[in-house]
Length: 193
Image 1: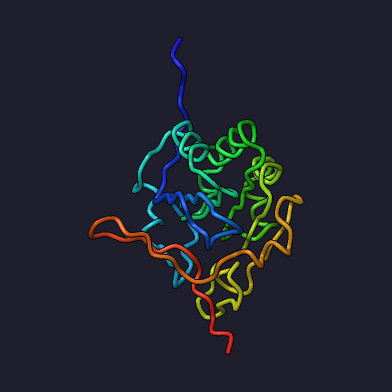
Image 2: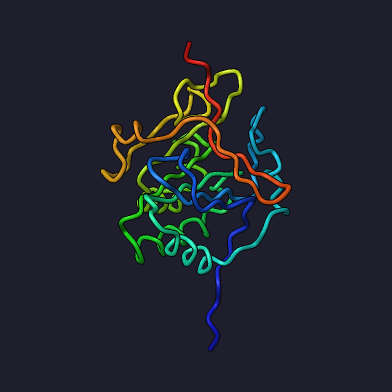
C-alpha cells in the first residue's frame, strides 16, 4: 500500500527570516486569498490557481533541517483558504519538534474565522502559539513591527511566545536575493517620528 502525501500550494517559502516573528523563522506564504485587501504587499499570492504545490513531508524536513530556528510563521495569501493542509503541517511539526513556535497571520477577524471555518479553526488555534488577525489597511499602517496595520489583533495562545518576545522581533523589510530575482519579507512600518 503506497503512502499518500498531502500538499500545500505556496506562493513562496523562505528558510531564514528574522522580521516575521521573534528569532530566526522559516516562513511560508500560502497561495490564494479571497479577501483582496487594498494595498496588499503580495497581491500575486491571491490567485488560488497559481503557486507551487509542495509536499508537507518535504516542508517538515526542510524546517527540521534548518539550523537555529526559533519557529515558523505562516502568512499569505490567506492561510485559512488552505486550512486542512495548514492544520496537518502544524500538527506534524508539533509531533516532530514541539520546541518550535508557530505564528499564523490571517486577514479574517477572530469571530469571522470561527464562524466560517468552525471546528477546523478551533483545531488550528490549538496547534499555534500566536494568531494575528484582521484585514490589512494601507491607510492605517502600524507603528510596530508585528502588524501591517494597527487594526490587526494579536492573540497569544500559549506561553511559547509572550509579549516581551516582541522586543526580539526585527522590524522593517529584508531582501532575499536569488540571482537576478529577489523577494522582500517583513512589514513596512509607519514612521515613528
